[in-house]
Image (cartoon, rainbow, N blue to C red):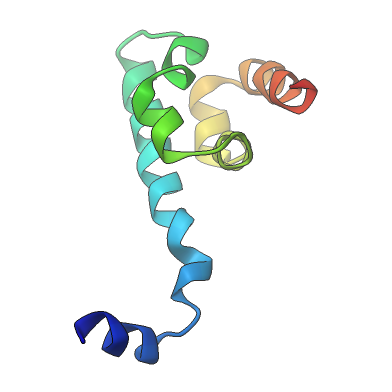
Length: 85
């Protein structure tokens, strides 16, 4: 019953469901990068793979805060790799 009530309050909430997971993955990527890990290692982590599709990862890598933190060239190379796969 509680789920039905939540749905009736916001019937389009399913459209925004991935935004929260994308935000958490972005924070995870930045944290792991600060610890010295390479972006390719981070993107291969089960946590990232279980919470985001390749399209979601592309959106995360296009975020301005992620680009600033990781460097534009690193993100561009990984976006190119994702588009080719």
